[in-house]
Image (tube, rainbow, N blue to C red):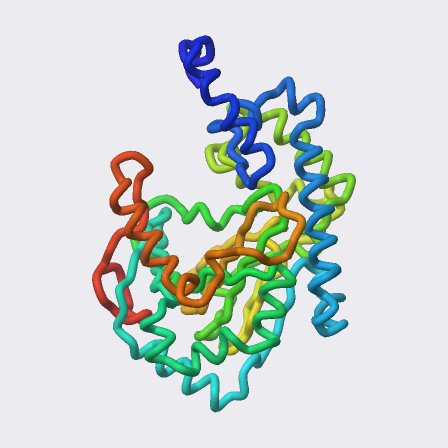
Length: 348
């Protein structure tokens, strides 16, 4: 806030809203003066929010994990992700990949630095046209993994995502900086439709960085006291960046890079530190990408109206349309590029 707005009586009209946000996933230190209050954070506000949501996520995952393979629970508990090579039989994967890459669909693109992220909604029409895709997203093992890592029995948002690197004469892609998406456990998943080599900017993840250790909690407290003016712009908005040189202080190893063949699934808790690896050449990576984030203070597993059939597969087009209408007030970084294939080789 500016000096004038800090002392404006009108700001107190928003106090109930700011207070209510403390029991949600709101994370921005610059948009909510309570979340960004150094006085409250010195008294432990940020630490308390972090402790509570991690404890609730552990309780929910304990219930959801009963249906998961023991080896998958163990891998997640140790690493913060579940890696499944060869998720589908080779012939089924080949047929699925061919159908997905051949389909022309409405697409959106966002430019970040020198990289382009393209997303195509997996919506009702796509699920109707590609039965193999519907079968994949309804497969029991798939849904169990999504729910367990998310910590909720809710339907993720699904996209066909294409990452195009070194496409513009611009600064480096900001997604290559190690970061946590938010202060609470949350889920993203990548099911790779193309091979990912070390030169292609693979997903990287710091094993074990999803755990709320005393060192991680102290780091969170330190960053909260520095925010918003003492950290970078994205950290100030609640997606904390961390330098590789800070990892040993938190007792964490170097990041691992997921250089994997196509047909590999990686389901990740993105409260852990992760990044897009540095691409050494122009490349194109295509994946089925899943995203799930819910109010982390909710103790129950389900009850999400937006996950109901008939609604879940229509959420993304509705979200795009709403943001298009409100672009003057909230912005719209996702540019409509018309109907294209996921493997179209460059910016449209």
